[in-house]
Image (cartoon, rainbow, N blue to C red; front, side, top):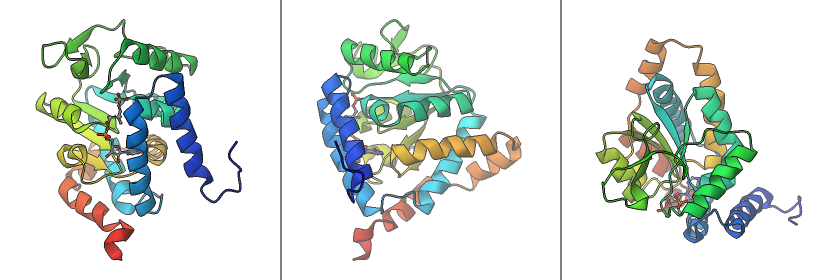
Length: 246
Ligand code: PTJ
């Protein structure tokens, strides 16, 4: 039981969710290491959505709303930290959710599929019963893509993605939007839009902005995309890190 008056309460709650997800068997063991790394970066940006992340989120939402086949990818960590929030974003942007695991096992996929069902989302893609394609044609479990989802997607949101998979998707011609607290990660560096923020803040904010942007016309949305430059934005993100100012 975490005392509510603990100065690091929110951070401890997230840590607890990650630990419980591991105990329940759907979070990869290294997912806990990834979370620790994320915590450090989050601490350094003041555990808030910085301006550059806000701008990336606007560009990301505009891109998803203009996409033909957007897909929201989920892994163990995103499920542990932002399951309901991901469902809300999917509903708001009419985008399917697909399970996309770096350390794919049938057991983890079944558990994540069941969790989404339990939370009212019944048509998750990438499950063990889905018609899966393998990007590298060698049935590498890291290369799965649902024929109704990632395989035909033009835009994919990948929160917390490993660099290898991001590269695989990029090579397959997809536009990649990542949420990654590390602006220097391979995923952040190779994505088309990199949101340097915590998934627990970024995903609900994306839903809020999607609600607003749905009433805007294509010219408005395209303008936001055209005025966004990922390289410049990543530099701005780096400047938000307190350590850079010591
Ligand atoms: O569930 P699986 O099998 O798909 O595995 C998921 C992990 C995360 C284990 C896998 O994709 C992996 O190994 O990822 P990496 O290479 O450790 O990258 C994770 C990135 O996410 C790192 O750059 C972290 O800083 C960042 N990160 C960690 N927690 C968060 C985060 N970014 C945003 N929000 C977070 N809460």
